[in-house]
Image 1 (cartoon, rainbow, N blue to C red):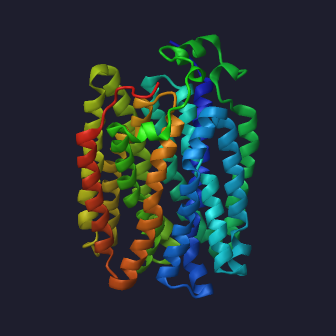
Image 2: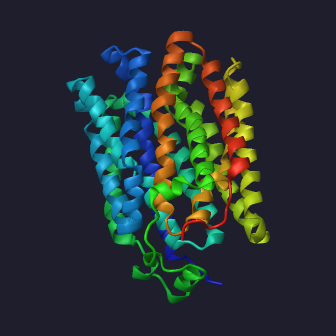
Image 3: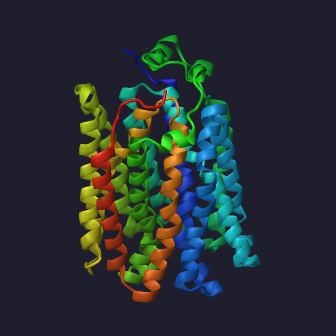
Length: 420
């Protein structure tokens, strides 16, 4: 038993902080776009195009980011990624004043930088964490998503009203630059290279792990030939359809669909996001405890968590569009986030089961597919609203996609190592 603060906890914490910054920079425009649209005269379709353009850049460097992290180190790739997207966050206001085309280019550039985040983190976690700690670490990292979302949703209206929408991007972009200097001092790609790792902690980390440098990364074609990989790919796509639609459109849903005052939009979205923050960690700990108690039933545990996450989330999405009460809508969104968090113990951690030494590459592959809904889903949702003015239809499309993802995962998911 190792007592006290361990170096791997610092690594997990710094990665979670990078994810937090990633999401405050990603989400701020979903609120800031409301006054921006008024100033520049954008309709719903144009708003959808701007929100979706980020995901074009996010799509392009997923696989490359994972491969680079596995090959050259997650510390380098994640650090460069944070600097890159922070710079594009800062230049968003001048790009917007220069014209729609330059704004779209700046959003694509920001997506290019953020794309390496999760592949790099998965690559680092596969090296730094014993198998019985991985899901809870992924849970903590994933819980930084709603925490960053809440931070951005609450603080952005305050900054807009006090200083103007431009300062949202200047201030949030600066946070990533500060993080980078701490990252350089506190992180390493391999545990054995970190000056503060003790021999006892290194032995715990390396128990049951072989040297990741001894094997060549698998070809993408080989990964695409695995039905277990496709189970994760399809799940990632389906999960992100609902996730990205809500991330991009939830502030607009509360302000224009339910009549929440702009200044209070962050408060209205805070409760569902905080439920996600709490229960992503609960799901991580629960899954790891079940795996520790039943090490031979990992596949069954993953599928159970997936059923709770996707099934519960689909039920909420199917009915929430009919709700006109603000408190009831918030309550339903909270229930959906509580249930949805448990998918973390399903597809969300499955990468490290089947490709423990190439988790970054596999995460880059599946997150590429998971980025497509950010382009299609966010834009299509804007068109649905423009053509039908129906939030119910937007949510029910996401519910149907969730159910398809659940069925596909239950049939094809596995947890045996396939890529050494």
